[in-house]
Length: 285
Length: 285
Image 1 (cartoon, rainbow over the protein chains, first blue to last red):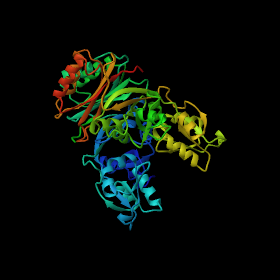
Image 2: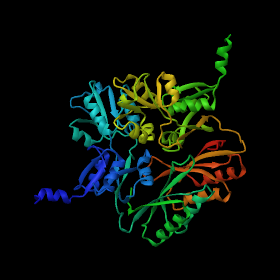
Image 3: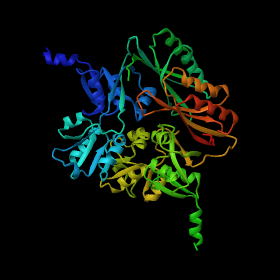
């Protein structure tokens, strides 16, 4: 017989995220479900695979950042590879910190490590506060902390406050991103999406086989005519040829709402590829 | 008096590109104007600055790849910072090669360096042909060749054939990208755009101040009504808040065409921000 701890562990929801511990993906997973059993994976496609193959019940991936825009990797996996559904969305503020080993004097810092996206998001801060410091690219904000710890010259890393905690290093400065409106939207993927909550969003992707003028306009008209508001419209390359695109739309409403169901049916008939990513409760941000 | 070589050099068009030599940006610049004086710059924003401050006459930046999609960095600079105009577009096939030092045995290769985008574009090839090899991220395909040359263990780099030539290393394999439809579209930036050629494209960006349903649909209707075809529609974050977007449209026609001029005027009046990136001859791809 299993002892009670093991049994409980066995019953916990398993959530796959882009590891290691200390990433913003882990923060999103903990915000979504603080009691989940977290399963770190090495890539976004591995997160989706883990759910697809039932190694995890749910997977969390970033889909959009308010400064950098869509996470193309995630969108392309949803379009071309995954069969998973979006069942929830979570928005996480990105608060970058400058971390250094205990006892490092700020004035001695000679290099700053971080992921290129994070370095970009803190560029003006670094130029102002660390004008003579060299910035070096790391593979993730967590990897940056490891690079900083290994550095033989006084170094800092830009990462989350949680990374400071996990690696036992000091926080030199907090909220150092140049733009205060820096948030990332994550989606929770599973085998089924969510039931109607009364205030939902639905995500779809579609493309047209031929390039005829006004096709996208025609599709948008189907939504406009029924008073369905679009929260987001986006295009990604079809990967077949330059100039051929897959369109992605987030619309307000649930796929089970009569007007939405009717429109999705029409859009599906008008397009050569149509994929429903699911309906899920809408967060206000 | 200047001697004739110097004089000629002085008269050559100066084109800024993302250096160092050997990048696909250099290839685009040479394809566009084989006689130009090329000015390597360290970043896309430096390329634009060089033109803005008259250090170069024109600048070449990548704007879109058929697999990876838009080059967000370039789009955001055009939206938020640059005052330059697009005067031409060039499409370059991306043919990645595996490069190694002369005399390196393929079977001995233990690591492969490249820019993460190039590694991504050759992922299946690497898994198939170099299943036990470690892949390592470099800052550019050119930097990957330098990293490979410095490696103490047998290494390879994924970069262009031109990089092989410039660095005097061997080409182990050619055209190793997984998707044969891998092309990058570059744009030529200058202080003025191009005169009508009879078959042109115009690029614009705009956003709405309030989030009212059907706004984008209304704008697309202005184009559809006048039979103006859209080559591309895209959204980028406004950077003000999640869920607020700048829309980018490439339309067929020149800003001096009557119907286009009329529509652009209406779109400008309907939007809270409007930016014309210029009109330029359309390439078929």
